[in-house]
Length: 105
Image (cartoon, rainbow, N blue to C red; front, side, top):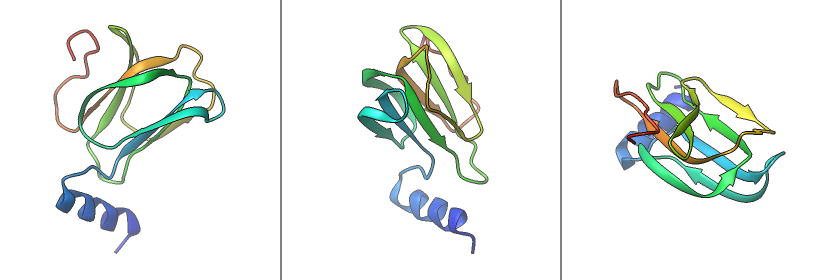
């Protein structure tokens, strides 16, 4: 069994996502750090300037990055940026067909 499938299976048993996003306060993955691995709308306690979005094979999850009520970006494939100049302060993870909307959560 592939490792990614095994991780996804274990995560589904525990109720947590195998997908996750790691956020850093400063460019180049430095400074304060936060990890989110659950579906929903999360306020980040800092403006993040670098990130890594990990999405497992077969996942339907997408991550949306918000700055205030503005949608900065949405990713449905793995992505990483060491210098996210615009920054963001909120993340939305959805794993169904609902739309990621920074204005309305």
